[in-house]
Every structure is written in structure tokens, then in C-alpha cells.
Length: 362
Image (cartoon, rainbow, N blue to C red; front, side, top):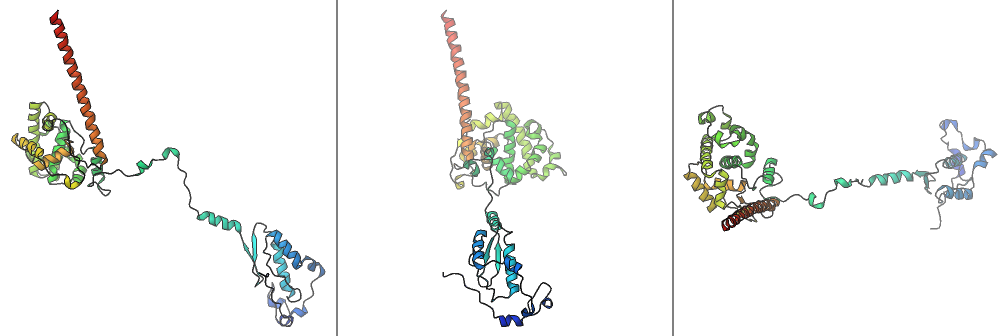
């Protein structure tokens, strides 16, 4: 580029006929020909174009500002320009830009621009090392496909903590048998939400106490049990409690009776898809028939298989579910403990036999 364009000089004759707007309006100023000439002291404050360009470079003023001609520009304009130039020295931290076509001076604050750009940057959060989690913890646990993110929270907890875990307590087994029979009228989420009512009505599922309940009061009007199940189901629960008491007298516990059908070891299904899980199995049919023969009611093969699933008699968690491996490891641990106890018992029997033989030899 050849340099900054020069400002077009104004015609003196035209400027003399126009009035200039001053601090107090047009009335305070007459034609330019009637104004007094600028004194020598004020002229000394003005800078030559060469000195102004050199000083502008040192103060950050753009060097492309055009020089003002003292002959072509009215004195009032030169006075205002010199005043603006002198005031610019106070703002040493700001950078100035001039537009050559108009002779106007603009100020841009570099610090403000930097702060704006800094404000647009995304804020970074400092995470404490103690609260950092591994990538595995951030990933959600994969459950059986029928448990989704929209499932009821009680149902999700039931799946993660109870469903498929081997149960060997008689009261707990009776409770799960009752809840499995209720599936013909309710769903698992609704059953779990009313679980506290089931335990209150059936006295924490103690078979001896439930078997002595008055059926007329249980199914009568105003009873809390009526809001849970139908009259047929309620009467069946009381009758099954009586039959469980008889099984306990015969086998020592309901746990030994029910687990004897699977040789005291849970069935590992290893299903990959929900469609592979059956509604009932031949083993469930065998258990159902034996219970009916003993006087149990409302214990069809479908109810019994649901009971086997929830009581851990069969592990029907999908292979992709994290609970499948956990239930399997728990079963392996129980089997190992039983084998150790059996081995200890066998060793004790052998030592007793050996001692008896030694005594006989003497």
C-alpha cells in the first residue's frame, strides 16, 4: 500500500459562510472570519504531523492517521483534534485506531476483549482424587432384559438382592411361596409395594401362627387381607401354612423337603435370551404334584416354578446379567462349605473306627 489517504481539504470560502456548532450552540459562534486568531501559546501545544506520527507510535496510536492541514481545516476543528490527541495520553493501557476517511478516533480496550474471550472458555472442574471413579463404575450394571431403567425401584432392588438367591429359612420360603401364588392376580412391582401389608396380615409368615388364623375374620368385611388377594387365595394361604407345619414335623424343616427335589443343589439354567426361560418345567410339575398330594392348594406347576426362581432353587438369571455370576459364586461357596463339613465328619468317623480297632487289638 502507498500509505494512508489524505484528508480532502475544505474550501475556505465555503467554511466562512457556515456557522460552527460550539459548546453553547450556533449562536455563540459567528462566521469564521470574525473569530480571533489563535494565540501563540495555544499554537505551541499543537504538534506537527511528523511529531504526531512519532508520538502515536510510542503510545500505540495507528500510524495511518492523516495529517491535518492548518490552511484547509478550520481552526475550531484543529483545536478539537489536538484536544482529543492530548487526552489520549491518559489512557495508556488502551489501544487506539483511527479511520482515515473521517479523521475520527476510536478506542478499543484490549483488556476487555481479552476478558470476553476468557469468559467464553468452558470452565474446568477440579475433581478430588478421593471422589474419582473408575470407568467400570460409571458404566451401568447389565441386568436381565425384563428389568429396565423405567422399572419400579423396588422391583430392581428385588432383582439385585433377592431373586435367584438360594433360601434355606422356613419362614422365608413360606413367604416366597405365598408371593409366587399371588402372581396370578398381581405383578411383582405391585406385590413388592404391598409386601409390608402381607407381612403384617400373615404375622411375618410364621407357618405355626398363620395356620391358627381364623379364616372367617381373615376374609370378613373390613379386613386388611381383602385388599390384597381374593378370598380363594387367602384361604389357600392358611391351609398351606398348616400343611407346611406337617412337613416340618416329618422332614425336620420345609427347607430339607423342598431342596431334596434338586439334590440340595440349585439348577443352573444358563439362558441367554428371555424367550428361552420356560413357564414351567418337569421338575416343577413333580414338586407341584407332591404338594397337592399332601394337601397344598393353589400350587400349580407355574406357581411352583416361579417359587423355584425366586427362592434360588433354579438360577434363571440371564448369562449376561451381573447377578448370574454372583449367585453362582454364592452357590459354589455353599457347596464348598458343605463338602468341608462332610469331610470333617468323615475324618471324625474314621478316627473313631481306628481308635476302636486299636482298643480291640489290645
